[in-house]
Amino acid sequence: MTTTKHHPADLTPVTDMEQVRERRAKALLEWRDELGGQWAVALSHGLPNADDLAYEIEVVERSIGDAHPSMFDAHFSEWIVRDAGRLHEPGSTPASCAMCDVAREGGAA
Image (cartoon, rainbow, N blue to C red; front, side, top):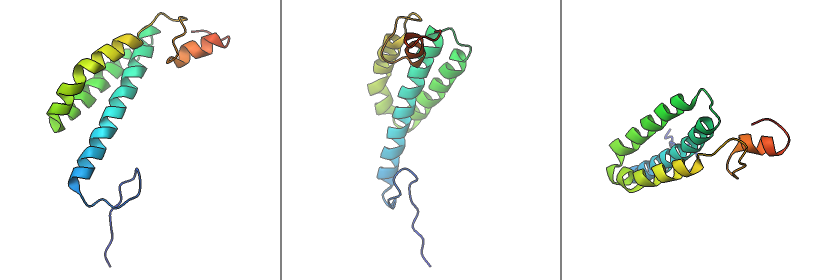
């Protein structure tokens, strides 16, 4: 009996290693972006996990750099600018901050 391995994201057969590399790269880029947003919220609101998130960002960036050096080079400055742009004063109500959304709805930031 022959079995076909499936990628958990889409359950289509994985036969081409380049497709696997591309999927992994895409997942790492998406995770890096998510972590950058979480870090900006944590730092902006003085949450204690900001340092942990910064470390996790570094780990993901190293993974990207090790597996895809040109991708890392192409995105690094973009990440810095985007993450810096996400920093804000608590209560300033940026559209991308869930904590500020709660404050807008009557909670505390």
